[in-house]
Length: 387
Image 1 (tube, rainbow, N blue to C red):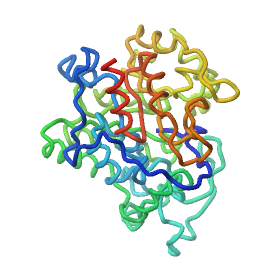
Image 2 (cartoon, rainbow, N blue to C red; image 1 turned 90 degrees about the vertical axis):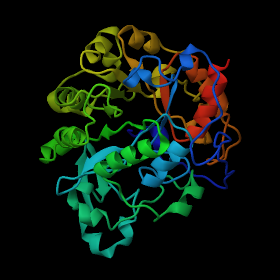
Image 3 (cartoon, helix red, strand yellow; image 1 turned 30 degrees about the vertical axis):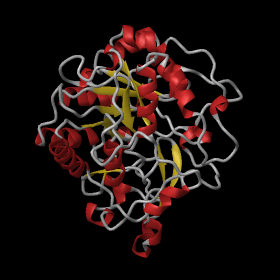
Image 4 (cartoon, rainbow, N blue to C red; image 1 turned 90 degrees about the horizontal axis):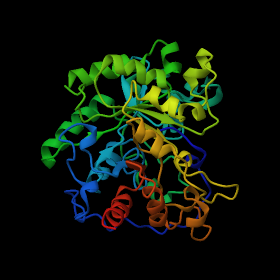
């Protein structure tokens, strides 16, 4: 899932550590939902529309509790009961393998800076028009990346996650697909994943096209059909259009701020912004090659200058009219990531009234939400579906 302003590190102090009460054990069982038909576990008999609504999607795993995009984070998301796990953000290596990292720059998510043998790999590149300095996956072979270990990306907000720094390596997408099959067998129920192609135009220019490599792996593991338990997403509509020609999987177009332009649009001279894509005309076009959209939460309910929620937009109704599902991003428990009226105190790593925020967003009719804290999301969902 892409970076928003709220994704960035915010200074913090002490932590009120809390794993949500939803966890009942390693089996991943969660407090039962009596609920309504809206919360039915299999409403359509197969495919993405069979998922519970609202769907709780573990954002980069359970990244509120473990360093993101690690098998430890993915595993915990399942144990906490997430309906779907975002495993992972897909970027290529120098030798053409696909690995799971939030961004191709890995200085903030691995211990690469502690490896003197890679000091010379530090460089500055132009990534989607932005100058970025660090270490990049496309400059490493898979064997070299496997010598690194994951670390917490936002330690000021999640100092407790630094306990797990160095524990897990960078997973490949193929390893994730195998893990998905193993977990499906062990749990006796289908495990769903929700990977994203990251900066596909950037990598295609480097001769490291993502879509073909992803499609090849999905075909290898028999997960390339319309009912496959793998939802593919991207911020670049042309990446989704390309995937639509390669595989039958459910596809989702991610949408950042209304004034932003997808980078593939910038590269091709398409003048449209996200604001154009979320009009009825734009949504109808998206529905021609995708099954859903993943908007930032601000496109569902904008905030005012003070960070308070205002009036919901018509996006949910307009998208549903076009036949699209909506899975907005990202719900987090910590104060800096919540609308102003739901914050408690000033500590950057303290929890606010996230249940109140969930209630407000769920009331708009969204079909699901990405969350760093799946257990909290499931409890909020329980409250919502049980009225």
